[in-house]
Length: 284
Length: 269
Image 1 (cartoon, rainbow over the protein chains, first blue to last red):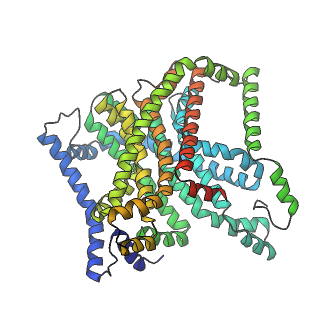
Image 2: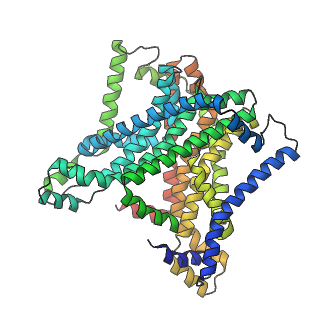
């Protein structure tokens, strides 16, 4: 749990078990921050150089500077599509959270239901969920609804699985203790069982957010007339690499924003758990 | 009420033993299929876009001479992407664990890249490599490669320190320590990543076929949807589902063969 001791262990895994001086430790921490930045800069510069020096035609790849310039300049053109994609994501994600947690609660209360859906939950993790998209598009066409449904499908299974795990993770002794002190069923659930499940639910939410973005993008790739995915596909068929990469930049921004929003909400709701987890990440 | 069988009530214990858990899901599936079939036959659901269960199954069997070669195309794409994922993934994982500079530089970028929707890359691949198998193989690789790297790194780092120190004190070289201690200790964790990667590779192949259709199951269902051939669409989707489950079952068998000591330990629970 404490990262001071972990320094010695980390060093052992790399080689001889030497005692770390304070200077080498500081140097290591600095390199840990600088090295990824350095590599990113090398990739950026190398990419630009490859295109300029190699005379790579614009229909194969766009240089990064042009992409960044377009991303800033064409903001007004990309904004409506960004809004459309964000709408699909927002509606679908909220629906999957509400529906997913509800299903997990029912499964927790009613055991036969849990056993019945269990194989479907496993199947959802090994079958490409995108295969449901053509069916939904056949039924609901090219509008907003099929995209929202696809996002819902992508998100709901992850949430059900994680919420169910969280709900059943309560040690039975705690439940017995609460009962012996006279806690009613609802009070027990609200004060003990549900808060205990929240860390799992939140990790499910973060995972589902990532899946939801993938679902929205895929839905727009296959059948859309607006949205970021549509802009990307349209740019691809026009061999317009600048617009393609710009669309991807916006997409990445949305994904990053959603992830950090989820982290922020998690920090608000369950600060006690998150602070404990940050230490573990550091030792990795 | 929903906790595991309490030691106090013995009857609870025996009741859960009598009914095998699979029954519930089979009953649920049967009920669902019956309801579906019933609603379509009664005309509540339009037959043009909602084929009955019997229609779908009939189509799945009738069209197998057409569908099975499509399965093979998708399998090839997924398999090649998978092979690439494992090769590059394990190689990178070993490099990350061995060389600190690579670990510091590459690993954080890899982890941060998980926030990015990797599927967004697909149109770029289509732009570069056209409509053949290559974009699908590459997409499968991009999707399947990270779980392998992560699980390899975690597995290699989980080698027991005392064993490594003992080996070093008795004069073992780096390569010996790697092949005899680190690698076997890493295998269980690596297989978790490999199984995940196999699933992702199938997904990548199908998605690739959605975006740049030429052949394969993904293309089949997209075209069937466009032609309003609902039965064929559902039949193709059924094939995809079976493919996904088969791949998963196959990977479990491989895992049981390769790391029997760890898996049997799991069965005791």
